[in-house]
Length: 195
Image (tube, rainbow, N blue to C red; front, top):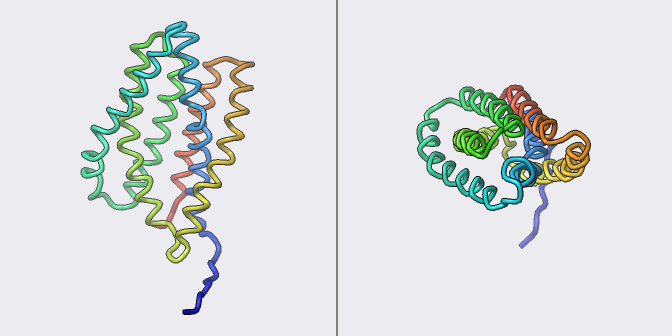
């Protein structure tokens, strides 16, 4: 049996745009949870880390309850509508994340977490559905690998930068920065043409 190695062609414009959108998203994702825990412990409920655990658990449960029903509801949409929902949803998510930095109390954080988790439940199945439509056939392994590498390296650098920014400017500016990253991610998603 002869082993044949097939050469892969370059990455399409649509995959590059998807990756750019993911870079912005993952740059914020890498740091939101640790900074949310710091926000809770240092500002909203001094010294009480347990609230952070409750907030995360609550968010995951809400997302789990809504993800499949929303996926079923949106499965009948065409790719254009799916892309628009992901783009708008990601920008809305950014606004919600930015709002966390200005939360006056734990109840507000739980309310925002409800909206964030529901938005995630709507967006993530659609986001990966769009990626499977724009990914170049015959180049899947490389492009899935690129999706992982291209997003993780900037996310790691972002975590360091955000730590320095937070130290100098505080939680409000830090969460505004997270929100902007998601907004840029959503805007980038609008530029995916093919699907």
